[in-house]
Every structure is written in structure tokens, then in C-alpha cells.
Amino acid sequence: MKRTRRSGLLWALWLILPLTLTGCQGEAEAKNPPPAELAAALMEGLEFDDQPEQVDQDAAMTVLGLDGWQDKTEDCAAYMGSGATPEQIVVLRAADEESAQQMAQSLEQSYLRQLKDSFADYAPAETPKIEDARLETRGRTVALCVCPDGEAAQTILDKEL
Figure 1 (cartoon, rainbow, N blue to C red):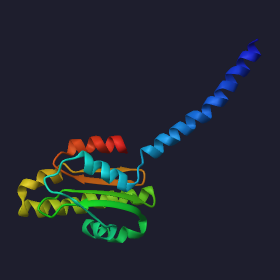
Figure 2 (figure 1 turned 90 degrees about the horizontal axis):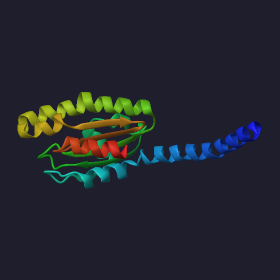
Figure 3 (figure 1 turned 90 degrees about the vertical axis):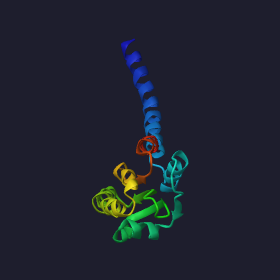
Figure 4 (figure 1 turned 30 degrees about the vertical axis):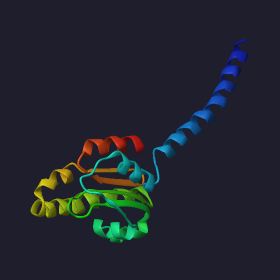
């Protein structure tokens, strides 16, 4: 009786384990959306003072100072404002996690700092948006969002990533 019970338990675990693993795999995929989907979720879920327009990867990488990372970038979705505000959404998919970390570091240490300095002189009332910018790196995905409500952006990023 003990042997049959143990065999039944092992059989049940053997059946459940693959289902559990595929469930985790599906969740991981759902939490790593393509850049266009994540950027669209941010655009739809946030309000902007300006109306960011979609720009292509080359233009985005140039503006961000990431020209040298083109070969390490598999995909990019970017929306940038008119220049009257710093509002923007950029989602990058790097070739590997190390590249993603390095791109995020460059965005934080160089791009956001330069953006803040520019707006401090040009439109100081806009600098709080830059100070509250959200920069997230998860796996190979780098997401930057500069908008009026950083908390709302963070909520969307946490949900989608």
C-alpha cells in the first residue's frame, strides 16, 4: 500500500512538473514584451504635455548618444516630443544583458544628465520630469520614460516587464 501511494504521488508530480515549467516559461515571455508593445503600453497609459511622435531607431540612437551601440541593438521603439519638453519613451532590446546594462548606464550617466542641463537653461520648469524619469533594465530590455507622472510610468513598467 505504501509503495502504491508513493508511486501514485511520483506519477502525479511527473505530470504536474511539466505543466508548471511551461506556465513559468509563458509568464517570462509575457513579462518581456517586444519594444513596440511596451512603448505602446506607455503611450496609451500615460498623459503627456507634449505629443511624442514615433521616431526610427537611427534617429533615436543618435539623439540618445548610443550611435556606437547600433550593432548591439536588436530592436527599438521610440517616441520623442517636439523639443519644447523632454518627454519621451524609448524601449531598446539589446543583443545581450551586458549590452543592455551598459546602454542603461550610458543613458543615466550621460544622456539624462545632458538633457537635464539643457532644460535647466532652456525651460527650467521641465527639469522635474527629467529628475523623475524612469529608466528600467530587465534582461535585454532597456526602457526610458520621461513624462509628467513618473509613478504612473513605473506602474506600467512593473506590470509589463
